Image 1 (cartoon, helix red, strand yellow):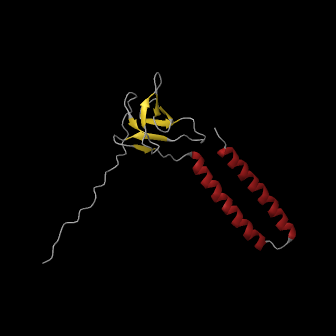
Image 2 (cartoon, rainbow, N blue to C red):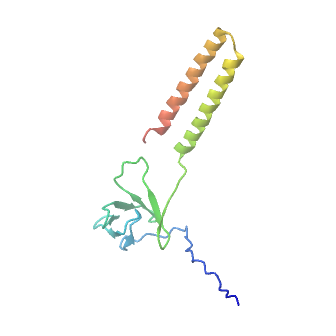
Image 3 (tube, rainbow, N blue to C red):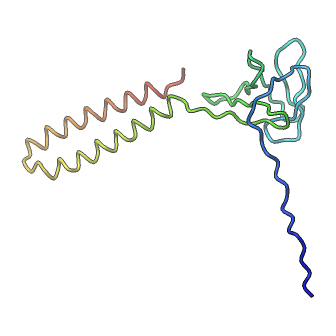
Length: 150
């Protein structure tokens, strides 16, 4: 006689991605992963963690909190889905521009390799090298202007 039991898979919570309004008077868990609690700070629209001492500001639309006093150029932003904090991820224009610059740099380097093979004379190779240096300098200056802090 064989004994068959139905396999019980652990029930996975579905993570809702719908942002719910944040009430400044309510107590929330800390989004940093520690066991602290976010409590309202008196006379402000901010919440402070009781464990890690981070301060989070509530955005004017009351849908997100952002971590204050960090050294990153972009602040982390979370939204509350009713049961937990969800990190808000954005595609910044800087990341798209960085990908475009990397691709253009790769194309320029591949073209320079083929130009070195195609132009055997030194005069043509020298003029191509000068043009390559100008294009690479332009790409580097563009990258520095895009990636500088606002």
